[in-house]
Length: 113
Image (cartoon, rainbow, N blue to C red; front, side, top):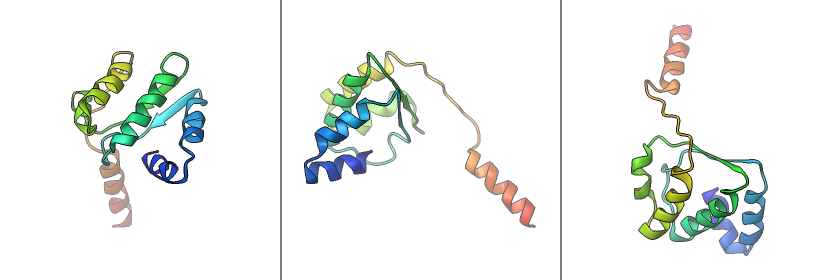
């Protein structure tokens, strides 16, 4: 999604992207915190979250605990606004343990030996 935001800023189709992200019953943001989030992308995300918060669902995955999410956003005020809308209305599921990719890699190595 962040790549889509950057290219939409360039070609002027940001409003169209915002509308398309507001429509699905479920929007999935996968791996929040993996890449950097620009000021523009953070403000865009805030507007999408704000549109969706009362009528549709949002699923966010991250390798970071929610307590660390604030650090991903360049502007603390925008971070507060996004996290206030997302975290306080959320059903959190925390998963711990060994990485599934690591487990699958071990299985593949064992099969090939």
